[in-house]
Image 1: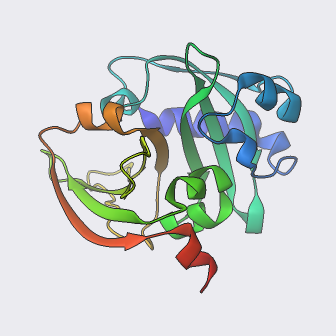
Image 2: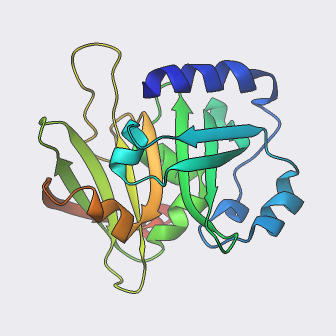
Length: 202
């Protein structure tokens, strides 16, 4: 179901793919007024239903806003934003077009990289079906956000995300509590750590 939504979004927003750029103004906690001032009206709505794969990961149900697409280094993204009741961004979703790795997303997207300004644990999450995804969990207990990188497949074989070099179908910035409430029975294992500061120093 997510693949159908992905294709529709890319086809619909294709004419403006190269008109936008990544911005920290789409970070969690940014007020809607600042986003509107930077990007104008949303391109369109994106609805998450209770039975969607996105909702099963921890994405809030209801209407999200599609504000921009990015194309740094010939890579393209559909960026989807959710505002909480206080009109502050509380969640983000990205759908990369083409083969884009976790590391490339973190390099391209200030809003995602900012979650790991300090050290993030790399956590391999395996669900009941045996599909593996990568969670970046800040070691700072005061940070209530996590980053989750999920695979997808149009075939019977799932494309797992197991490292910073893995290709990603969906990327999420969510509250830790929202994510954990949907992954209580998942098997997870810390496999390393990453920070935007370390990456910038390479």
